[in-house]
Image (cartoon, rainbow, N blue to C red; front, side, top):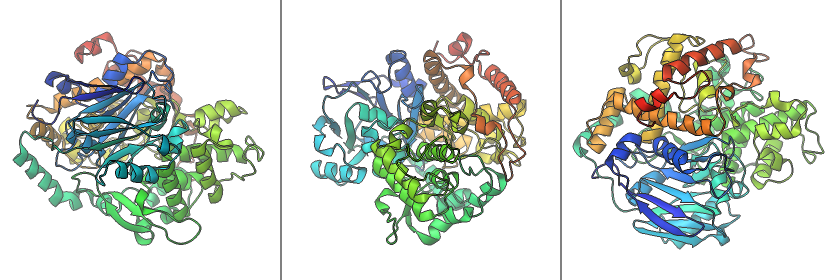
Length: 614
């Protein structure tokens, strides 16, 4: 295999320290690509049903895609997957940066990590040299310390490192994996799986560039994006995510106090524009990308100093620790982001779980005795920061909250379920489906639990159809609050196309059109591919992930929204807006039939035959 792929999968068993390389051949890669496609294939085929996600029987898979490492905007991503300790189902999370490119440059398309080491270890991969090294001195260290020690041991400042902090070591169920301090595989608890294996880090140094089938044509396309980025993606290029806080608050999309309320008067104080004016020290990028949407913040004075080594908060983080916890102090939110990076915690699940605890506390369902004397009221910024540290260390009330809001609710009882804003156990991102109805369906049916990345943003298609997706045959706008057949068709096509990014390992923030994305694959791999083939790659991966969940006991009953999101907000734009359960169930009926699933949400044998995965 000459182009795009390396045709090598590295398999490492930490229990017996056996290291193997596998070659699957071109047809395998063309069928599954990478990312979600490759991860779902191996998890479904190789994991025993109903295993404990934190047992040695789980497998942790790092996977590149065909685009990873190609010199073009958006190609710096990779995926990490395992059975999720947060949901008990299919788990997968993506990260940008440079780590995935380095894995490809070292000669591998993926790493499959099995078993559990008796003592803490880290992996050192330098091209063909693969070592399992002692990490006992690193255990307990936060991310920056870990990075510095490993770079010293490997004698290279350019070593790319994926590591966990104390949160991953302590098996916080929503622990993340931090790549090079700033790039995060955040969702689903992949860091806890890594910790359960006594694996502190995976350090990589590669020297061989990815071979491109049509380098000049790829270069021309890359230059086109560079010349047009200000026109196509000005806001992201200038501010990063979080520049629409005021609009989100006005429309009701901004979650306030655990998704309960809709009014947050000082939304502008926690926006990306305010970051740029006050605490920003620059913007950085991922491999070969001209979007440059990654914030770097620094706070030198006051009670909450913030280290720029850990980057800066994205929109999800700004809202999760800001409006959703009732806090409008930007420096505190930046500190919360830094703490989550240090401990390796998913900022979405951490913020939503803390807001869950705050609402429980305000309703007397969580007492001062249980919180060790901490007044866990909405707006208490010191308490919020304390909670992050307690969760990361699994101390006191933090030990309960480290289980996630679903499991914490079951332990607390007292009818706290209505305050737990999660789906399949994964906390809901900072986009309200009472505003965007199609997105609500996406949350409900997502294989990983509530997720906004392989979803639809109804607002983008309510007035005009963006050029990027017109090639799918979507030509007419659909109202935001519609949940009928036109919206289901729109959701099906767009979410399938968006999910393709998780197989290509391509960033959704690079506004490639349908035709350009097909060209990217063609120019990198040399394959005479089509949009039809790429849609089938995405469908195949989604169905494999769905089958994994079916095997683990999930079906239609789990494709639901939490109680909080089925009722109106107490004030603001959505105070008279709710999602009708019958409408959602009808939407599921239509969607299941469109995608070839039966009325329980299980893929039919005919659909599996059509996708060649029967």
